[in-house]
Image (cartoon, rainbow over the protein chains, first blue to last red):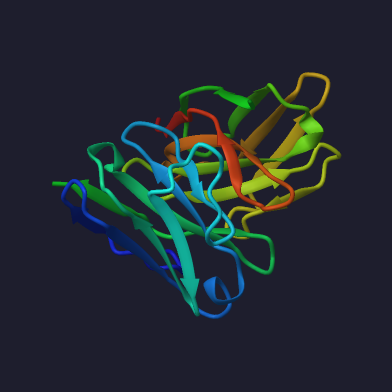
Length: 109
Length: 118
């Protein structure tokens, strides 16, 4: 069971803006950087956001990350069919152990 | 561009040792921490551990008693050994490159499915 909670599913229609949440507590999300990974069907995860809100080169600016207190959010604007994937949040705890959220399956209707 | 490729047996018997290797190309082995992550079919991600090219390791506390990660700089590869496996260790195993500065998994291998079954 993950120490960070994500909704198991989310959905939206093309062009819509959707947000995916990741909730923890002060010892993980509250005091650490949050990363987000996208896992397209049948593929390995890929980093989408690191250090709460930074995008690696090549990631469209439709994807954005934010953090407030012990919660983090991933927002996807201008939703496209190719965004249908599972999204994971991740942090490193004080023992340098990587912790992943349970994942949110995003469906584009 | 870093490229990673996992290799090893796809089937391991219960109580035996799972052994995988990750071959690195397109990057110097000293430029990253090298990590293993696994994903049971249809489930979430679990970090296993990482190694630095000098041999320093860090393991997930839940697996530390059964895990060894090693590195072979001459072959530009690193390896995972997980002993006393059970069906619960059935998963897709990914190797990944972990950046020093920002500590995120910058590149991933394609993953390899390991099934534990007699």
